[in-house]
Image (tube, rainbow, N blue to C red; front, side, top):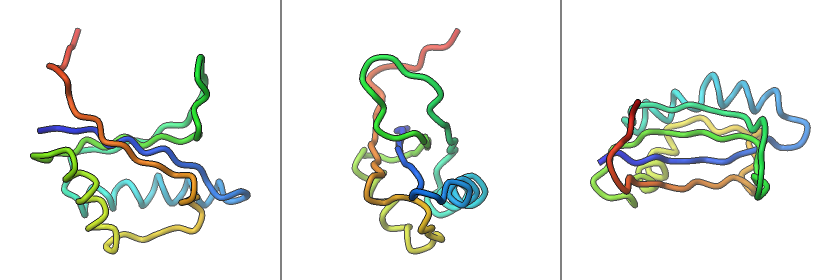
Length: 107
């Protein structure tokens, strides 16, 4: 079953250039290579309405797993295989798994 892993992050103050380089040019590809997931893409908050988004950067990964909890288990188990950056603020980052509630709609 396909699940979406949604990750919100921000850089450590003063390290946005290093953070962006690490995330875009290394981290996403390493996550895909170590987990076997299909795709990942990064976004930056550019506008909002309603409740404030807590962090400015979003990454979305498409992950295959029989059970939703296996997504975060796989991410944690493969973490030692990936380079880590001190530019990513780990105190504020968060990750959530979303699973489908119905079929995909396309136009």
